[in-house]
Image (tube, rainbow, N blue to C red; front, side, top):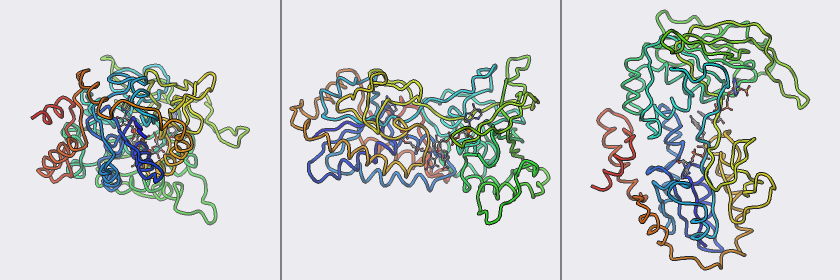
Length: 444
Ligand SMILES: Cc1cc2nc3c(=O)[nH]c(=O)nc-3n(C[C@H](O)[C@H](O)[C@H](O)COP(=O)(O)OP(=O)(O)OC[C@H]3O[C@@H](n4cnc5c(N)ncnc54)[C@H](O)[C@@H]3O)c2cc1C
Ligand SMILES: NC(=O)c1ccc[n+]([C@@H]2O[C@H](COP(=O)([O-])OP(=O)(O)OC[C@H]3O[C@@H](n4cnc5c(N)ncnc54)[C@H](OP(=O)(O)O)[C@@H]3O)[C@@H](O)[C@H]2O)c1
């Protein structure tokens, strides 16, 4: 059988591993990515000061070493190759394209200078080529990060870390240079619901209390009384923060709960001057959840930058069915369907965040991708006998279209160069952040 997987993040790699482990048949597997570099958000999302999590790439590299695996980097579905091309050259297709677009707050002033989605900030500090042109004016003393998820925590932490804490990480050189000059002293992390509803995880929250040069600030009045037998969860950690005396001169991270931004205020130059907030209360819904409802009481916090970290969404890819409501690839348990009729799109599957939306950790994709592969196996018998063009015909087609293909061996060369450059500043790597530079280096 021949299978194409589009997207080389965790979900794509775990699906590849599950397919290559099949004992009933040999799978020739081509894993495409629009970037010359593999690993999706493990490279472009996971924070630079969390190197341990990135060691999962060793598992993915061992998948890449399997004899029938090929990486075809620098190939974008919808630009360089179409869904029809894939059907012609493969028996089955798996979309593993993740969630690469930000969700917006939808409030006035959202697009003004220094009001930028956290996705851009994350991509910028991680050296993702899409965000290389981004510029962050870190001359402002106060920043608001909107959201109470782990991405908001990452963003707040990177803003508050000292240059010494960052320089031995694989943070992009341009971001390190800008953060060295940063004048940011206070970060506000804004949750629209209460501390008990926050989405961040205890280990990530706890880390915010251990920064070299920044202290967490929590108003004890925002916290419910401790319940008997309560473990070391978010509330317990926040109570610990609330009881601390901040160090004089340290930067500050203010936790604010039950507030929603209603308007980004502009200064005379059109940049952010402040953020208007509305206080919320919680209201139960029929399904037992608690939603934030505005009280009409407003306040303004004086911040010079706003970074909403309120979630991600899947991009639309030409020829791939898209669920407009859920903002992901339309599917029924990983089988791609027409979003309107729900009719099955034969031989098309989807895994990872493109299938289920932007929730969940890297390790969770292993089981989830294997489940989709089980559906693929069930449906494989009927399609595997269809004759296909020779395996390399897709390479020839792409070259004809002017694509410079990047193989896994090519990636290993880029990897070596990055590791060597990083060693000069005692970092695990220094990323090459420009696709043209990567391709030029490989041509040489
Ligand atoms: C900022 C951030 C930090 C995170 N930190 C952690 C963490 O510390 N620990 C943890 O466990 N989880 C973390 N996560 C969650 C984790 O990254 C995700 O669960 C996981 O990466 C999703 O995997 P995926 O394969 O679905 O998507 P992705 O990892 O996004 O991979 C998608 C891939 O598809 C490629 N692609 C997209 N469109 C196309 C196209 N048209 N053609 C070809 N290729 C395409 C992309 O280039 C990318 O390589 C974090 C997430 C974010 C956003
Ligand atoms: N270190 C790590 O392990 C790590 C790091 C980063 C990301 N991740 C994972 O990646 C996934 C995505 O993380 P994420 O932080 O993007 O998403 P998330 O966990 O879903 O958090 C999103 C946050 O945004 C809030 N929000 C959404 N819409 C809003 C609005 N209109 N106004 C105000 N607030 C709004 C949500 O509040 P409500 O709860 O009220 O909706 C929530 O607090 C998560 O599974 C996360 O755990 C893990």
